[in-house]
Length: 394
Image (cartoon, rainbow, N blue to C red; front, side, top):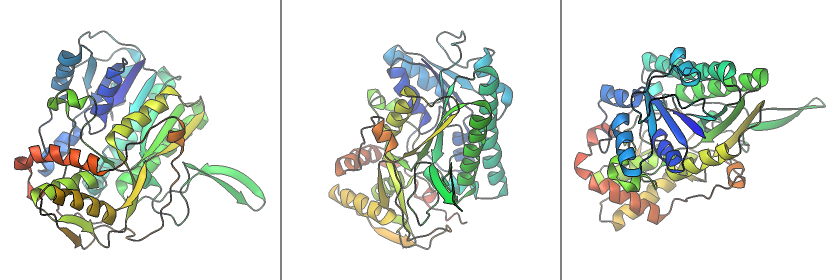
């Protein structure tokens, strides 16, 4: 099977590419280095240097003999997207630069992924909306016109739902109103421009499913943590991009870096904000299971892609406990919350669907945290405390 991964240089995209290549799939990745360029623009460093895609794929080929084809291009340009399906694509790196053929599955990660970035100013909000919606729309039309049987696996976000005072179902809600019944997308109330763009992604694809019988699986993912996968353990040069700054870093990854560097853990407000989390290894599992049993033509299938829920206070306490065991002087500091969000709320999402498909969760244990600490400690000298917190407000 040929798998096309949009956003293949990212925190999730690169591990996904290696994972499917390791399983024997033909893999093509596309990226325009948005995240790297944004990090350079904002002056927020990464924990360690990650080679560019062509260098990464060359290392991968040397180690495994397997090929991951690379396209560097802006997917907001419809012709770049269409070239991936009509055979006019030009590869920036490949062992064999002949067209692999129309993919059976497209994994769509190619979006500006940061809520704080989307609210830094109106220009970055515009970048978020234009990039995210244009890429999704371009993909939808390319599939309709050139490859209508392709299965689109799109990465959504649990942030689309917000924090409603009812249980969060997996994408859909059955409604009875004035004696009649129907099924609707679960009500969504995003807390950032980024999350709002993801809601609009879902709406675009739901239109394509209804009008053109597209096949779509939408994975509503919670914040991801972790550094290593089976593939990255082959060679540290294969590790994925790892941010610890306020803009692109996720909370568990940030807390571990803060613990190692001696920076107090940044708990916003009361710290009762509760979300669903998963290990990067489980992202790979979830995408693989979704691919193995694709959505039917005319189906928008939605899974809540989390494995367990924690409040920020719980995460801070867990990270601090392990950090202290490892000899770090970890402190927790409650900051005035720069975000407009509920700090205490009800949160009870359903997340059974992926487990039913066979995903075996990796839970957040002391052992997992020790493993992450050990990698961060290797790179302690490169940590810049000045980029950890800048207080981006909305």
